[in-house]
Length: 270
Length: 283
Ligand code: SF4
Ligand code: SF4
Image 1: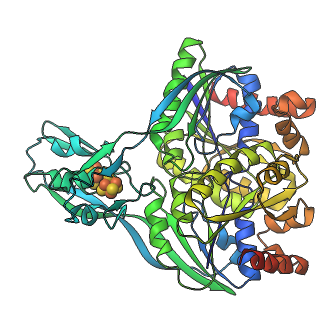
Image 2 (image 1 turned 180 degrees about the vertical axis):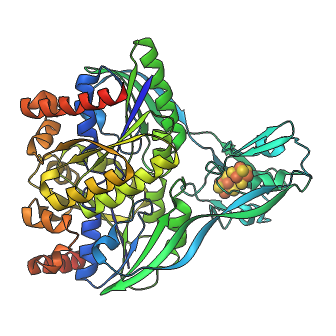
Image 3 (image 1 turned 30 degrees about the vertical axis):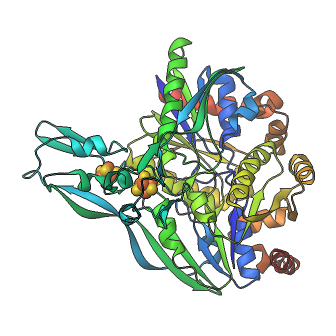
Protein backbone atom coordinates (compact mmCIF):
# COMPACT_ATOMS: atom_id res chain seq x y z
CA UNK A 1 0.00 0.00 0.00
CA UNK A 2 1.22 3.47 -0.89
CA UNK A 3 0.24 6.42 1.28
CA UNK A 4 1.32 9.87 0.12
CA UNK A 5 1.58 12.74 2.57
CA UNK A 6 1.11 16.07 0.84
CA UNK A 7 0.18 19.64 1.60
CA UNK A 8 -0.67 22.48 -0.71
CA UNK A 9 1.11 24.96 1.49
CA UNK A 10 4.70 24.40 2.54
CA UNK A 11 5.79 24.15 6.14
CA UNK A 12 2.56 22.72 7.48
CA UNK A 13 4.20 19.68 9.01
CA UNK A 14 4.00 17.25 6.13
CA UNK A 15 7.38 15.71 6.88
CA UNK A 16 6.50 15.52 10.56
CA UNK A 17 3.39 13.49 9.75
CA UNK A 18 5.17 11.33 7.17
CA UNK A 19 8.10 10.42 9.41
CA UNK A 20 6.04 9.81 12.55
CA UNK A 21 3.55 7.73 10.59
CA UNK A 22 6.33 5.67 9.05
CA UNK A 23 8.12 5.09 12.35
CA UNK A 24 4.95 4.15 14.25
CA UNK A 25 3.96 1.66 11.57
CA UNK A 26 7.42 0.38 10.58
CA UNK A 27 6.83 1.50 7.02
CA UNK A 28 9.39 2.48 4.41
CA UNK A 29 9.58 6.19 3.73
CA UNK A 30 10.29 7.71 0.33
CA UNK A 31 11.31 11.35 0.49
CA UNK A 32 9.94 12.68 -2.79
CA UNK A 33 10.47 16.32 -1.82
CA UNK A 34 13.63 16.17 -3.89
CA UNK A 35 14.17 19.94 -3.92
CA UNK A 36 14.41 20.05 -0.15
CA UNK A 37 14.45 16.51 1.26
CA UNK A 38 14.06 16.67 5.03
CA UNK A 39 12.74 13.30 6.15
CA UNK A 40 16.16 11.91 6.93
CA UNK A 41 16.81 14.77 9.31
CA UNK A 42 14.31 12.92 11.52
CA UNK A 43 15.14 9.33 10.56
CA UNK A 44 18.90 9.93 10.87
CA UNK A 45 19.94 6.98 8.74
CA UNK A 46 23.35 6.84 7.16
CA UNK A 47 22.51 7.42 3.52
CA UNK A 48 24.30 5.66 0.71
CA UNK A 49 24.01 6.74 -2.87
CA UNK A 50 22.31 4.12 -5.04
CA UNK A 51 22.41 5.83 -8.41
CA UNK A 52 22.52 9.09 -10.32
CA UNK A 53 19.62 10.58 -12.25
CA UNK A 54 20.38 11.69 -15.77
CA UNK A 55 18.58 13.67 -18.41
CA UNK A 56 19.23 13.34 -22.10
CA UNK A 57 21.55 16.16 -23.03
CA UNK A 58 22.18 17.05 -26.67
CA UNK A 59 25.78 17.41 -27.77
CA UNK A 60 26.39 19.52 -30.85
CA UNK A 61 29.04 18.70 -33.40
CA UNK A 62 30.06 22.06 -34.87
CA UNK A 63 31.84 20.36 -37.76
CA UNK A 64 28.64 18.77 -38.98
CA UNK A 65 26.28 21.60 -38.05
CA UNK A 66 25.16 23.80 -40.95
CA UNK A 67 23.47 26.33 -38.63
CA UNK A 68 20.14 25.67 -40.32
CA UNK A 69 18.29 26.48 -37.07
CA UNK A 70 15.86 23.55 -37.38
CA UNK A 71 16.63 22.27 -33.88
CA UNK A 72 16.23 25.71 -32.32
CA UNK A 73 12.92 26.18 -34.07
CA UNK A 74 11.70 22.82 -32.86
CA UNK A 75 12.77 23.21 -29.24
CA UNK A 76 9.75 24.35 -27.24
CA UNK A 77 11.91 25.18 -24.27
CA UNK A 78 14.05 27.75 -26.08
CA UNK A 79 17.12 25.86 -24.99
CA UNK A 80 18.99 26.35 -28.26
CA UNK A 81 20.08 29.56 -29.97
CA UNK A 82 21.90 29.37 -33.28
CA UNK A 83 24.37 32.11 -34.14
CA UNK A 84 25.93 32.50 -37.61
CA UNK A 85 28.76 30.17 -36.72
CA UNK A 86 28.11 28.98 -33.20
CA UNK A 87 25.50 27.33 -31.00
CA UNK A 88 24.37 28.54 -27.61
CA UNK A 89 22.86 25.80 -25.49
CA UNK A 90 21.05 26.67 -22.25
CA UNK A 91 21.13 23.44 -20.36
CA UNK A 92 18.88 24.61 -17.50
CA UNK A 93 16.06 25.10 -19.98
CA UNK A 94 16.45 21.75 -21.75
CA UNK A 95 13.85 19.14 -20.85
CA UNK A 96 15.80 16.30 -22.40
CA UNK A 97 12.98 15.52 -24.80
CA UNK A 98 15.40 14.50 -27.54
CA UNK A 99 13.52 16.30 -30.30
CA UNK A 100 16.47 18.31 -31.55
CA UNK A 101 18.39 15.15 -32.31
CA UNK A 102 15.46 13.79 -34.31
CA UNK A 103 14.98 16.95 -36.41
CA UNK A 104 18.64 17.45 -37.24
CA UNK A 105 19.15 16.41 -40.86
CA UNK A 106 22.93 16.55 -40.66
CA UNK A 107 23.49 14.17 -37.79
CA UNK A 108 25.14 16.98 -35.85
CA UNK A 109 23.50 16.19 -32.52
CA UNK A 110 24.70 13.33 -30.37
CA UNK A 111 22.88 12.07 -27.36
CA UNK A 112 24.84 12.82 -24.21
CA UNK A 113 23.59 12.82 -20.68
CA UNK A 114 23.65 15.23 -17.83
CA UNK A 115 23.36 14.43 -14.16
CA UNK A 116 20.52 16.27 -12.46
CA UNK A 117 20.16 14.40 -9.21
CA UNK A 118 20.81 11.39 -7.03
CA UNK A 119 18.92 8.58 -5.31
CA UNK A 120 19.88 7.53 -1.78
CA UNK A 121 18.98 4.75 0.59
CA UNK A 122 19.53 4.15 4.27
CA UNK A 123 18.18 2.37 7.31
CA UNK A 124 17.78 3.36 10.91
CA UNK A 125 14.95 1.36 12.39
CA UNK A 126 12.96 1.92 9.25
CA UNK A 127 14.13 2.13 5.68
CA UNK A 128 14.36 5.40 3.82
CA UNK A 129 14.80 6.21 0.16
CA UNK A 130 15.52 9.78 -0.85
CA UNK A 131 15.80 11.70 -4.09
CA UNK A 132 17.94 14.81 -4.33
CA UNK A 133 17.80 17.43 -7.07
CA UNK A 134 21.11 19.10 -7.90
CA UNK A 135 21.24 22.79 -7.11
CA UNK A 136 20.63 24.93 -10.17
CA UNK A 137 18.55 22.23 -11.86
CA UNK A 138 14.95 23.07 -12.64
CA UNK A 139 13.29 19.67 -13.13
CA UNK A 140 12.32 17.70 -10.10
CA UNK A 141 9.96 15.31 -11.86
CA UNK A 142 12.54 12.94 -13.43
CA UNK A 143 14.23 12.52 -10.04
CA UNK A 144 10.86 11.69 -8.47
CA UNK A 145 9.92 9.14 -11.11
CA UNK A 146 13.27 7.39 -10.78
CA UNK A 147 12.90 7.34 -7.00
CA UNK A 148 9.41 5.89 -7.27
CA UNK A 149 10.74 2.92 -9.23
CA UNK A 150 12.15 1.71 -5.91
CA UNK A 151 8.72 1.27 -4.35
CA UNK A 152 7.99 -2.35 -3.58
CA UNK A 153 5.04 -4.13 -1.99
CA UNK A 154 5.69 -3.07 1.58
CA UNK A 155 3.78 -0.30 3.29
CA UNK A 156 5.26 2.81 1.69
CA UNK A 157 4.90 6.38 2.89
CA UNK A 158 5.71 9.09 0.34
CA UNK A 159 6.69 12.54 1.54
CA UNK A 160 5.48 14.78 -1.30
CA UNK A 161 6.86 18.21 -2.18
CA UNK A 162 4.88 21.27 -1.09
CA UNK A 163 2.74 23.09 -3.59
CA UNK A 164 0.20 21.99 -6.13
CA UNK A 165 2.27 21.66 -9.27
CA UNK A 166 3.69 19.00 -11.50
CA UNK A 167 6.13 17.34 -9.06
CA UNK A 168 3.32 16.89 -6.55
CA UNK A 169 1.17 15.12 -9.12
CA UNK A 170 4.06 12.89 -10.08
CA UNK A 171 4.21 11.78 -6.44
CA UNK A 172 0.47 11.35 -5.92
CA UNK A 173 -0.10 9.42 -9.12
CA UNK A 174 -0.77 5.76 -8.33
CA UNK A 175 -0.89 6.28 -4.55
CA UNK A 176 -3.66 4.43 -2.73
CA UNK A 177 -4.37 7.17 -0.23
CA UNK A 178 -3.35 10.78 0.28
CA UNK A 179 -3.05 12.48 3.64
CA UNK A 180 -3.30 16.25 3.23
CA UNK A 181 -1.58 18.08 6.04
CA UNK A 182 -2.69 21.62 6.69
CA UNK A 183 -2.68 24.28 9.36
CA UNK A 184 -5.76 26.10 10.64
CA UNK A 185 -5.13 29.46 8.98
CA UNK A 186 -6.52 31.25 5.93
CA UNK A 187 -3.30 30.42 4.04
CA UNK A 188 -3.65 26.76 5.00
CA UNK A 189 -7.29 26.65 3.91
CA UNK A 190 -6.64 28.36 0.61
CA UNK A 191 -3.90 25.93 -0.38
CA UNK A 192 -5.78 22.92 0.99
CA UNK A 193 -8.69 23.66 -1.33
CA UNK A 194 -6.39 23.55 -4.35
CA UNK A 195 -4.77 20.33 -3.14
CA UNK A 196 -8.19 18.71 -2.69
CA UNK A 197 -9.14 19.68 -6.23
CA UNK A 198 -6.09 17.82 -7.53
CA UNK A 199 -6.57 14.72 -5.43
CA UNK A 200 -10.20 14.55 -6.53
CA UNK A 201 -9.16 14.92 -10.15
CA UNK A 202 -6.76 12.01 -9.74
CA UNK A 203 -9.54 10.03 -8.08
CA UNK A 204 -7.57 9.06 -4.97
CA UNK A 205 -9.09 8.66 -1.49
CA UNK A 206 -7.88 11.26 0.94
CA UNK A 207 -8.25 12.70 4.41
CA UNK A 208 -7.03 15.77 6.24
CA UNK A 209 -4.65 16.14 9.17
CA UNK A 210 -4.66 19.49 10.93
CA UNK A 211 -1.30 20.40 12.40
CA UNK A 212 -0.68 23.13 14.97
CA UNK A 213 -4.32 22.93 15.92
CA UNK A 214 -5.32 25.97 17.93
CA UNK A 215 -3.05 28.59 16.37
CA UNK A 216 -5.53 30.08 13.93
CA UNK A 217 -9.20 29.96 13.14
CA UNK A 218 -12.02 27.49 12.53
CA UNK A 219 -11.94 27.80 8.74
CA UNK A 220 -10.60 24.34 7.95
CA UNK A 221 -12.98 22.47 10.23
CA UNK A 222 -15.99 24.34 8.92
CA UNK A 223 -14.90 23.72 5.36
CA UNK A 224 -14.31 20.00 5.94
CA UNK A 225 -17.61 19.42 7.70
CA UNK A 226 -19.45 21.29 4.96
CA UNK A 227 -17.75 19.25 2.25
CA UNK A 228 -17.97 15.96 4.13
CA UNK A 229 -14.19 15.56 4.29
CA UNK A 230 -12.81 13.41 7.04
CA UNK A 231 -10.41 15.00 9.50
CA UNK A 232 -8.16 12.08 10.34
CA UNK A 233 -6.15 13.67 13.11
CA UNK A 234 -5.50 16.94 14.87
CA UNK A 235 -2.05 17.63 16.21
CA UNK A 236 -2.29 20.44 18.74
CA UNK A 237 0.17 23.28 18.82
CA UNK A 238 2.27 22.31 21.81
CA UNK A 239 5.57 23.58 23.04
CA UNK A 240 6.75 19.99 23.59
CA UNK A 241 6.09 18.95 19.99
CA UNK A 242 7.59 22.17 18.59
CA UNK A 243 10.75 21.76 20.65
CA UNK A 244 11.17 18.12 19.63
CA UNK A 245 10.65 19.21 16.03
CA UNK A 246 13.24 21.96 16.17
CA UNK A 247 15.71 19.37 17.47
CA UNK A 248 14.61 16.95 14.76
CA UNK A 249 13.36 14.26 17.12
CA UNK A 250 10.25 12.41 15.86
CA UNK A 251 7.70 12.98 18.60
CA UNK A 252 6.36 9.41 18.51
CA UNK A 253 9.73 8.40 19.95
CA UNK A 254 9.18 10.52 23.05
CA UNK A 255 5.42 10.58 23.41
CA UNK A 256 4.05 7.04 23.39
CA UNK A 257 0.41 8.15 23.26
CA UNK A 258 1.17 9.61 19.86
CA UNK A 259 2.75 6.44 18.61
CA UNK A 260 -0.59 4.77 19.34
CA UNK A 261 -2.46 7.51 17.53
CA UNK A 262 -0.35 7.12 14.40
CA UNK A 263 -0.93 3.35 14.43
CA UNK A 264 -4.66 4.04 14.69
CA UNK A 265 -4.43 6.55 11.88
CA UNK A 266 -3.02 3.83 9.66
CA UNK A 267 -5.86 1.50 10.68
CA UNK A 268 -8.41 4.08 9.52
CA UNK A 269 -6.63 4.50 6.20
CA UNK A 270 -6.45 0.78 5.54
CA UNK B 1 14.57 49.25 -10.61
CA UNK B 2 15.38 47.31 -7.47
CA UNK B 3 13.89 43.84 -7.37
CA UNK B 4 13.87 42.02 -4.07
CA UNK B 5 12.77 38.40 -3.73
CA UNK B 6 11.63 37.06 -0.38
CA UNK B 7 12.25 33.33 -0.38
CA UNK B 8 12.60 30.54 2.13
CA UNK B 9 13.61 27.15 0.72
CA UNK B 10 11.33 25.48 3.20
CA UNK B 11 7.74 26.62 3.14
CA UNK B 12 5.85 27.96 6.12
CA UNK B 13 8.64 30.01 7.62
CA UNK B 14 6.54 33.17 7.43
CA UNK B 15 7.85 34.60 4.19
CA UNK B 16 4.50 35.98 3.02
CA UNK B 17 3.75 37.58 6.40
CA UNK B 18 7.16 39.21 6.38
CA UNK B 19 6.85 40.37 2.80
CA UNK B 20 3.46 41.94 3.49
CA UNK B 21 4.99 43.86 6.40
CA UNK B 22 7.74 45.22 4.19
CA UNK B 23 5.07 46.16 1.69
CA UNK B 24 3.51 48.47 4.28
CA UNK B 25 6.64 50.65 4.26
CA UNK B 26 8.33 50.06 0.98
CA UNK B 27 6.17 51.98 -1.48
CA UNK B 28 6.77 49.09 -3.83
CA UNK B 29 4.98 47.07 -6.45
CA UNK B 30 4.26 43.53 -5.30
CA UNK B 31 4.56 40.32 -7.27
CA UNK B 32 3.35 36.97 -5.94
CA UNK B 33 5.36 34.38 -7.87
CA UNK B 34 4.35 31.48 -5.63
CA UNK B 35 2.06 30.53 -8.47
CA UNK B 36 0.89 27.11 -7.35
CA UNK B 37 0.10 28.21 -3.80
CA UNK B 38 -0.27 32.00 -3.82
CA UNK B 39 -1.23 33.50 -0.47
CA UNK B 40 -0.30 37.17 -0.59
CA UNK B 41 -3.67 38.18 -2.04
CA UNK B 42 -5.35 36.84 1.10
CA UNK B 43 -3.68 39.66 3.01
CA UNK B 44 -3.79 42.30 0.31
CA UNK B 45 -7.41 41.61 -0.68
CA UNK B 46 -6.71 43.36 -3.95
CA UNK B 47 -9.06 44.84 -6.46
CA UNK B 48 -8.43 42.92 -9.66
CA UNK B 49 -8.14 45.11 -12.74
CA UNK B 50 -7.22 42.58 -15.33
CA UNK B 51 -7.11 38.80 -15.59
CA UNK B 52 -4.79 37.69 -18.33
CA UNK B 53 -5.12 34.04 -19.36
CA UNK B 54 -1.83 32.21 -19.39
CA UNK B 55 -1.06 29.64 -22.04
CA UNK B 56 1.11 26.92 -20.61
CA UNK B 57 2.85 24.18 -22.51
CA UNK B 58 0.72 22.55 -25.16
CA UNK B 59 -0.57 19.05 -24.79
CA UNK B 60 -0.46 16.29 -27.39
CA UNK B 61 -3.66 14.81 -28.77
CA UNK B 62 -3.94 11.73 -30.97
CA UNK B 63 -6.50 11.70 -33.74
CA UNK B 64 -7.93 8.19 -33.51
CA UNK B 65 -9.11 8.23 -37.10
CA UNK B 66 -5.70 8.95 -38.55
CA UNK B 67 -3.68 6.81 -36.12
CA UNK B 68 -2.33 3.59 -37.64
CA UNK B 69 -1.20 2.22 -34.26
CA UNK B 70 2.47 1.99 -35.18
CA UNK B 71 3.58 2.93 -31.66
CA UNK B 72 6.34 5.28 -32.79
CA UNK B 73 5.10 8.11 -30.54
CA UNK B 74 5.10 5.90 -27.50
CA UNK B 75 8.67 4.84 -28.17
CA UNK B 76 9.87 8.40 -28.71
CA UNK B 77 8.22 10.05 -25.71
CA UNK B 78 10.81 10.39 -22.97
CA UNK B 79 8.29 11.35 -20.32
CA UNK B 80 6.32 8.10 -20.41
CA UNK B 81 3.29 10.17 -21.27
CA UNK B 82 1.93 7.72 -23.81
CA UNK B 83 0.64 4.35 -22.63
CA UNK B 84 -1.09 1.98 -25.05
CA UNK B 85 -1.39 4.82 -27.52
CA UNK B 86 -3.25 7.02 -25.05
CA UNK B 87 -1.81 10.35 -23.94
CA UNK B 88 -1.61 10.73 -20.19
CA UNK B 89 -2.27 14.44 -19.93
CA UNK B 90 -0.71 14.95 -16.51
CA UNK B 91 2.54 13.51 -17.74
CA UNK B 92 2.72 15.24 -21.12
CA UNK B 93 5.36 17.95 -21.16
CA UNK B 94 4.20 19.30 -24.50
CA UNK B 95 7.60 18.78 -26.08
CA UNK B 96 6.15 17.87 -29.48
CA UNK B 97 8.41 14.88 -30.13
CA UNK B 98 5.48 12.51 -30.69
CA UNK B 99 4.08 14.85 -33.33
CA UNK B 100 7.50 14.94 -34.94
CA UNK B 101 7.84 11.18 -35.22
CA UNK B 102 4.27 10.32 -36.18
CA UNK B 103 4.42 9.06 -39.80
CA UNK B 104 0.79 9.93 -40.58
CA UNK B 105 0.42 13.30 -38.84
CA UNK B 106 -2.11 11.96 -36.39
CA UNK B 107 -0.87 14.03 -33.48
CA UNK B 108 -1.75 17.59 -32.85
CA UNK B 109 -0.41 19.88 -30.17
CA UNK B 110 -3.27 21.68 -28.48
CA UNK B 111 -2.90 25.04 -26.83
CA UNK B 112 -4.47 25.39 -23.44
CA UNK B 113 -4.95 27.86 -20.65
CA UNK B 114 -3.17 26.67 -17.51
CA UNK B 115 -3.39 29.75 -15.35
CA UNK B 116 -3.85 33.48 -15.05
CA UNK B 117 -1.79 36.53 -14.43
CA UNK B 118 -3.80 38.99 -12.38
CA UNK B 119 -3.07 42.69 -12.41
CA UNK B 120 -4.52 44.38 -9.36
CA UNK B 121 -4.54 47.33 -7.00
CA UNK B 122 -3.89 46.93 -3.32
CA UNK B 123 -3.67 49.30 -0.40
CA UNK B 124 0.12 48.95 -0.56
CA UNK B 125 0.42 49.59 -4.26
CA UNK B 126 0.15 47.82 -7.59
CA UNK B 127 0.10 44.05 -7.40
CA UNK B 128 0.64 41.29 -9.94
CA UNK B 129 0.06 37.67 -9.10
CA UNK B 130 0.02 34.39 -10.88
CA UNK B 131 -2.58 31.76 -10.35
CA UNK B 132 -2.02 28.33 -11.75
CA UNK B 133 -4.97 26.04 -12.36
CA UNK B 134 -4.83 23.07 -9.99
CA UNK B 135 -2.21 20.53 -10.96
CA UNK B 136 -0.68 22.41 -13.85
CA UNK B 137 3.02 22.75 -14.18
CA UNK B 138 4.35 25.63 -12.10
CA UNK B 139 6.57 26.76 -14.87
CA UNK B 140 9.14 29.48 -14.71
CA UNK B 141 7.38 30.94 -17.71
CA UNK B 142 4.31 31.97 -15.71
CA UNK B 143 6.60 33.44 -13.07
CA UNK B 144 8.34 35.46 -15.77
CA UNK B 145 5.01 36.81 -16.96
CA UNK B 146 4.07 37.87 -13.45
CA UNK B 147 7.40 39.63 -13.08
CA UNK B 148 6.99 41.32 -16.43
CA UNK B 149 3.58 42.65 -15.40
CA UNK B 150 4.98 43.85 -12.08
CA UNK B 151 7.67 45.71 -13.96
CA UNK B 152 5.10 47.39 -16.19
CA UNK B 153 3.04 48.42 -13.17
CA UNK B 154 6.14 49.80 -11.47
CA UNK B 155 7.00 51.87 -14.51
CA UNK B 156 3.43 53.16 -14.74
CA UNK B 157 3.29 54.06 -11.06
CA UNK B 158 6.82 55.43 -11.11
CA UNK B 159 7.98 53.17 -8.35
CA UNK B 160 11.44 51.77 -8.12
CA UNK B 161 11.08 48.75 -5.89
CA UNK B 162 9.45 45.39 -6.66
CA UNK B 163 8.91 42.91 -3.85
CA UNK B 164 8.65 39.32 -5.05
CA UNK B 165 7.09 36.47 -3.09
CA UNK B 166 9.07 33.44 -4.23
CA UNK B 167 7.82 29.83 -3.98
CA UNK B 168 9.29 27.17 -1.72
CA UNK B 169 11.95 24.78 -2.98
CA UNK B 170 14.81 25.34 -5.39
CA UNK B 171 13.28 24.21 -8.70
CA UNK B 172 12.12 25.91 -11.85
CA UNK B 173 9.69 28.52 -10.45
CA UNK B 174 12.19 29.49 -7.76
CA UNK B 175 14.97 29.95 -10.27
CA UNK B 176 12.64 32.18 -12.29
CA UNK B 177 11.65 34.15 -9.18
CA UNK B 178 15.12 34.98 -7.95
CA UNK B 179 16.98 35.19 -11.25
CA UNK B 180 17.97 38.75 -12.15
CA UNK B 181 16.90 40.20 -8.84
CA UNK B 182 19.08 42.59 -6.87
CA UNK B 183 18.59 40.82 -3.60
CA UNK B 184 17.18 37.63 -2.11
CA UNK B 185 15.96 37.78 1.47
CA UNK B 186 15.99 34.26 2.83
CA UNK B 187 13.52 33.77 5.66
CA UNK B 188 14.52 30.90 7.90
CA UNK B 189 13.74 29.63 11.38
CA UNK B 190 15.92 27.87 13.94
CA UNK B 191 14.91 24.29 13.16
CA UNK B 192 17.12 21.62 11.63
CA UNK B 193 14.90 21.37 8.56
CA UNK B 194 14.69 25.08 7.90
CA UNK B 195 18.46 25.50 8.24
CA UNK B 196 19.07 22.63 5.87
CA UNK B 197 16.77 24.19 3.28
CA UNK B 198 18.19 27.67 3.81
CA UNK B 199 21.66 26.38 3.00
CA UNK B 200 20.50 24.84 -0.26
CA UNK B 201 18.69 28.01 -1.23
CA UNK B 202 21.71 30.17 -0.43
CA UNK B 203 23.88 27.89 -2.52
CA UNK B 204 21.44 28.33 -5.36
CA UNK B 205 21.42 32.13 -5.01
CA UNK B 206 25.19 31.99 -5.18
CA UNK B 207 25.00 29.83 -8.28
CA UNK B 208 22.92 32.57 -9.93
CA UNK B 209 25.11 35.30 -8.41
CA UNK B 210 22.40 37.11 -6.49
CA UNK B 211 23.17 38.95 -3.27
CA UNK B 212 21.57 37.39 -0.18
CA UNK B 213 20.40 38.51 3.26
CA UNK B 214 18.90 36.36 5.98
CA UNK B 215 15.99 37.03 8.32
CA UNK B 216 15.53 34.62 11.22
CA UNK B 217 11.89 34.16 12.12
CA UNK B 218 10.78 32.68 15.48
CA UNK B 219 14.36 33.10 16.68
CA UNK B 220 13.39 32.50 20.30
CA UNK B 221 12.24 28.90 19.84
CA UNK B 222 15.78 27.52 19.77
CA UNK B 223 18.72 29.74 20.71
CA UNK B 224 21.41 27.18 19.92
CA UNK B 225 20.25 26.84 16.39
CA UNK B 226 20.22 30.60 15.98
CA UNK B 227 23.91 30.46 16.78
CA UNK B 228 24.35 27.81 14.12
CA UNK B 229 22.65 30.09 11.57
CA UNK B 230 24.77 33.04 12.67
CA UNK B 231 27.97 31.09 12.33
CA UNK B 232 27.01 29.82 8.90
CA UNK B 233 26.11 33.32 7.69
CA UNK B 234 29.32 34.76 9.10
CA UNK B 235 31.38 32.21 7.21
CA UNK B 236 29.44 32.83 4.03
CA UNK B 237 29.65 36.60 4.42
CA UNK B 238 25.87 36.91 4.51
CA UNK B 239 24.26 39.62 6.56
CA UNK B 240 21.47 38.76 8.99
CA UNK B 241 19.18 41.78 8.74
CA UNK B 242 16.62 40.84 11.33
CA UNK B 243 15.46 38.47 14.03
CA UNK B 244 11.78 38.13 14.71
CA UNK B 245 10.37 36.47 17.83
CA UNK B 246 7.69 33.80 17.76
CA UNK B 247 4.46 35.71 18.16
CA UNK B 248 0.88 34.54 17.73
CA UNK B 249 0.04 38.01 16.42
CA UNK B 250 1.46 37.02 13.03
CA UNK B 251 -1.18 34.34 12.65
CA UNK B 252 -3.87 36.58 14.15
CA UNK B 253 -3.05 39.31 11.67
CA UNK B 254 -3.27 36.78 8.83
CA UNK B 255 -6.63 35.50 10.09
CA UNK B 256 -7.82 39.10 9.98
CA UNK B 257 -6.50 39.69 6.48
CA UNK B 258 -3.92 42.20 7.67
CA UNK B 259 -0.19 42.56 7.65
CA UNK B 260 1.28 42.40 11.13
CA UNK B 261 2.32 46.03 10.74
CA UNK B 262 -1.34 47.00 10.61
CA UNK B 263 -2.16 44.75 13.51
CA UNK B 264 0.41 45.31 16.23
CA UNK B 265 2.42 48.43 16.99
CA UNK B 266 5.38 46.76 18.61
CA UNK B 267 5.90 44.29 15.80
CA UNK B 268 5.35 47.13 13.33
CA UNK B 269 8.34 48.92 14.87
CA UNK B 270 10.48 45.82 14.60
CA UNK B 271 9.52 45.20 10.99
CA UNK B 272 10.20 48.85 10.18
CA UNK B 273 13.69 48.56 11.67
CA UNK B 274 14.40 45.47 9.59
CA UNK B 275 13.15 47.14 6.44
CA UNK B 276 15.28 50.24 7.12
CA UNK B 277 18.30 48.01 7.54
CA UNK B 278 17.63 46.44 4.15
CA UNK B 279 17.09 49.83 2.50
CA UNK B 280 20.32 51.18 3.98
CA UNK B 281 22.26 48.23 2.67
CA UNK B 282 20.85 48.73 -0.78
CA UNK B 283 21.83 52.35 -0.98
S1 SF4 C 1 16.45 17.81 -25.98
FE1 SF4 C 1 14.46 18.83 -26.34
S2 SF4 C 1 14.47 20.47 -24.81
FE2 SF4 C 1 16.59 19.78 -24.99
S3 SF4 C 1 17.49 21.13 -26.49
FE3 SF4 C 1 16.77 19.32 -27.60
S4 SF4 C 1 14.72 19.89 -28.29
FE4 SF4 C 1 15.28 21.36 -26.70
S1 SF4 D 1 4.30 16.05 -26.52
FE1 SF4 D 1 6.22 15.15 -25.74
S2 SF4 D 1 5.68 14.63 -23.60
FE2 SF4 D 1 3.74 14.97 -24.66
S3 SF4 D 1 3.14 12.94 -25.31
FE3 SF4 D 1 4.24 13.88 -27.04
S4 SF4 D 1 6.34 13.17 -26.79
FE4 SF4 D 1 5.33 12.80 -24.84
